Length: 118
Image (cartoon, rainbow, N blue to C red; front, side, top):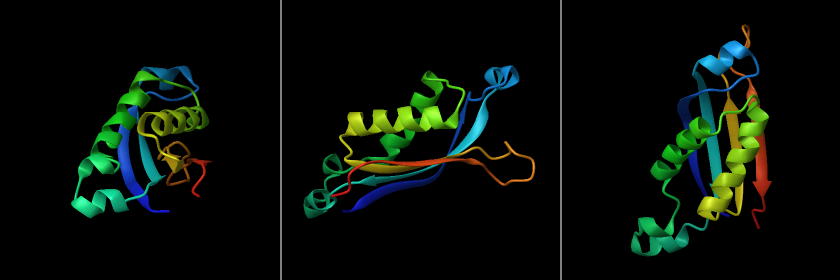
């Protein structure tokens, strides 16, 4: 299966369990791989037949800001389902990092894989 990907997408959103986190925006870094047959788009050089990573990047930030949650796990699950449904993506791997959340770590986060790549 071919893949379309977005790597290192940085967004600002409200996320976190603690009250002070609910009152600020924090940086998240997102890596997304999406299973997609790119042949159809490549055949006639047609954007409409592939996944528009610019539009999906904007959708990710909009979704995160319109659906605040406490946990990265919750955001990952809901975002994956939203993207798969909205863009008819059969398989994806989503990694969300929260840099600075743990003092001695460059980043912490979650990575999930959903759907089938067959």
